[in-house]
Length: 193
Image 1 (cartoon, rainbow, N blue to C red):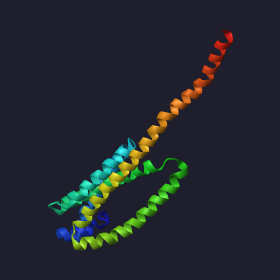
Image 2 (tube, one colour):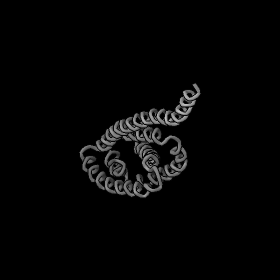
Image 3 (spheres, one colour):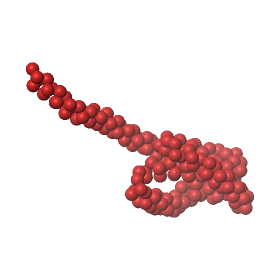
Image 4 (tube, rainbow, N blue to C red):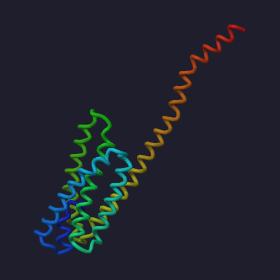
């Protein structure tokens, strides 16, 4: 909602020229692209922790943009947010895509949601930015914090379910593996007595 209206936000809040904003965004985008290539190696480490960290950082950056005293700092923060956003999306894809069979389906779903919410977000953001330029950014921060809480809650349930299954399954398997041996040993002892 707010990232797609960055130029409108900067024009309204800082009364900067379109040429200055375009020049600064070009430079910042180049830096962001290079940083994204560098950071992609980190996305492979622990995807869930990295995803949560990048979402938290995006929420912080959106809120930080609202208090940036100069247009150049706001552009740097927007570019940093874009870089972190790419890393966040990459980690989410690695969490959601569990096999080659589901890869195409998940990428299609992500792309459709991206297209749908980009248009809707730009429309709603333009309405909110006309009320108060900081409103879309603050709302984006709130939405990201809510998303983090929901993601953490769902991840916690999945962990508990996995932990419960992993605790019960090995004991059950060990028991099944040992049972024939115990039966054989017990029957042998009784037969010899």
